Length: 402
Image 1: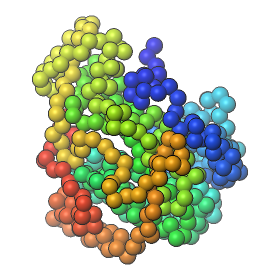
Image 2: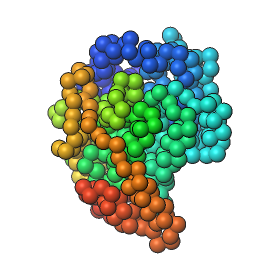
Image 3: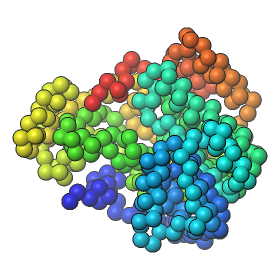
Image 4: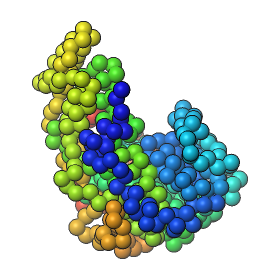
């Protein structure tokens, strides 16, 4: 039987235990003081990172856990998972709400609770493919920025002890709209740091997370469909467990306006074709390299007759916004790599100019009500705010690939 957790440990992150265990152990008492007996709200809690964050904080016995997510199926599965896991603590006051955090219903729910001690926001558009057209771009920026500000305004009425919002490694020297939105999001949340403590984290791809390419490999194999992957795109990876732990550590142990990142070395980056090939070997197949998607689809028909040669189409990346490698910080950011054994921290961030951010949002809102709104105009507005935003545009989207 295929063991995904073991595959991730051996072939993707190449470590058997979480890289954050030592820091959790060394700071156990401080984390316990932050969480035990507290009320926690997790927005986007049914996703890969949000659910892992929940499992991490439940070890420290909060008195209340409220989970909000638009995906009610995933919320149901989260509850089943928590209730079915031996030894996991689920507080008596545990509630899931299938709703949008930008809705009036969410506001009524939030106000009825009188706020929460700890708020974690994991609701975000995280994929580069989300910038394929102007409508997808507007949805991305609404979720990552405009609605996020609406949430922060609401939270300001009931200031929490800790606020965490997940960022991405793609926020460092962004080349796509998603990465630029997350870089601006960092400024946005930090602009509220004079009202309550705010922390975030930039971290690597979560191995086999919902919607990721490796997760797509498993779906393709299950359906006997060919694999497609870029040869030249290198990424850092953390396990699903580690993704929640880094968020917990940043939220509970970070100082105001700090950005956490994992101490991973460039040699630990992997390409997606490496993961795909190892995955096929583990499923008992030999790789059959094809020159095109079309050829791979044709060859896949032979799998139904029991062929052990699995067709793949590995090619160079040619889609918009795709960075060849990932990085966690820029050469202008100050880092502290001594405080924790497994984590680095970007420090020294000043309180951003809230009026400058609001001016950016006015421009975006004004653009989105115009019929002639275009991707190019969005990029120009974002670049005006982020002069180092060097958008990679090829005219091609990941939706054109398998």
